[in-house]
Length: 251
Image 1 (tube, one colour):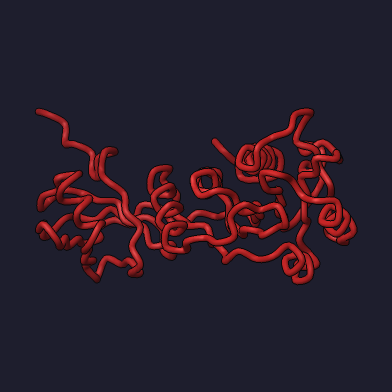
Image 2 (tube, one colour):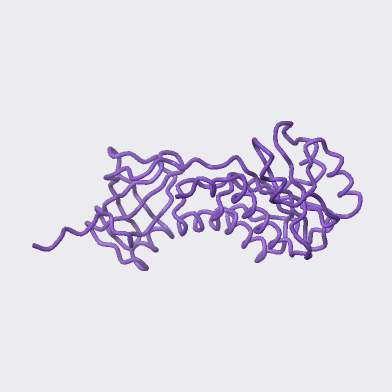
């Protein structure tokens, strides 16, 4: 007798939805998400879709209706609660669009709780398309099976960021001028943390002095080479996750 196929299959598509999920309430998907399910994934009634709502976690849902512009799904099984996210903020200086898109994507994959873009004197870009940013982090979370979305803050000027900085949060500053090796600094610091990374041209002298003078600031080094802004942000966050974040709890 053939074995019963696993449900939901590992190949089931994943979507984040705004509606809070429960076994009592169907979910209607329209627009781009409906197009993705119907035209790209070719779902049909009875197929499984994995839904996440950034509140209750991950659900296996069954397709009830599959139209060209409207898909109705019924959540069946609660697969996982919303993941516990390390209290880590990435504060990258705003970069050119394609490079900052990469930062948003990889920070989401790495498990950032919050991405807070910073405006500095040498930033080439000065605006962030909030809708585009939300789409990038959502798609990245779907691809890497996250059950939580990072918050993406509106860009803030460096002086405002420093002025309003929470007293209990470490501010690790990736300083081209040198500092404590990142792995060492991250390993011994406990509690809420953030990593501040500069733009393509780096911080100017006045900015560096202001950051270093901040009581929460810890200057760190990301190695002997000068890194691009996007590389520094991704590499620095990866080191933090390995030394102090949820990589420590990985099976």
